[in-house]
Every structure is written in structure tokens, then in C-alpha cells.
Image (cartoon, rainbow, N blue to C red; front, side, top):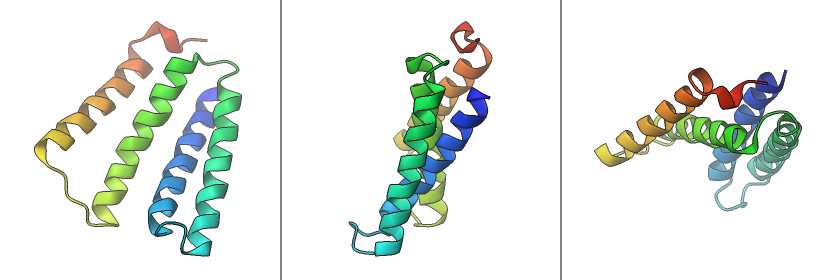
Length: 109
């Protein structure tokens, strides 16, 4: 169950960050409220996950997956460009999340 909640927390953080960008510095009320609500749900669920999953592991997965998803959204929705160094960095983050989830004993409960 904590892994499902962590997944939902990642989605919430991704929606929140996307809405934060769309809010244009909190100048659009709807996107601003969506950002606040999404981050609130995300932090609440992350707090629940931290009861059973080590903080370093949970936060690494939450933030790493969030970075990768927000980057993809930035590419598609906001037409943002990445240079080679940014692409390599994001691939390393994804690789780290993969290693934590599949090879590390730290994620076992």
C-alpha cells in the first residue's frame, strides 16, 4: 500500500508543479488553487508513506520520478528544450529510481 500511495503522491506533485508553471506566478487563480491542492495531497500522502518507507528512499523516488515526469510535461506542453547535459542528468535520475526500486534492499519492508 505505501508504494501505491507514493505513486499517487508523485502524480500529485507532478500536477502541482505543472499547475504552478501554468499559474504564471500565481496570477491565474484556477491554476494557483490546483497547485496548492495538488501539493497538499502529495505532501499528505508522502507523510503517510514515510511511516513505513525510509525517508531517503521515499524522497529519492518521489523527487526523482517527479523531475522526470515534469520534464516530459515541460517538453510536450510548454515546448521547453533540453540540451545534452540535461538529458543525461535526467536519465541518471531515472536510473537511480530504477536501481532503488529493483536492486536495493532498502526498499523492502
